Length: 136
Image 1: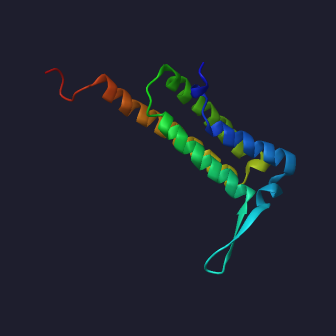
Image 2: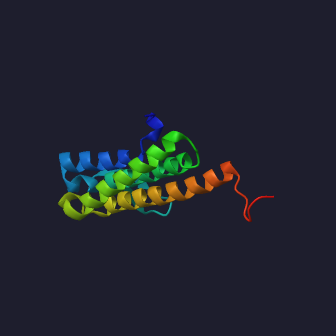
């Protein structure tokens, strides 16, 4: 199995769990750095913001990966489904997963699975060259 077959969203899932297991959910509210805005307001970049940003970047890469048609893409789709099931179960039964941050990770896994299969089917149809209406 190629490393490309591993769904990258699992990294966000693992990082979240490591953070919450070591520091509790309060660690998500920890400020990483403040930014003074031109408007005079203060914007605080928190650990939770970093986790969500990393999740969005990983989702983008997963969407790019889903445009490739390789044998490892089938394994990737299957593993993405397992990550989705694990995230859904954790969200429903683990107290520390009942946060908005984890919910966004869960939504990213749903998008990854749906987009992976949808894009994969469209790309496969294009690569095979099916034409509507039968033979010519």
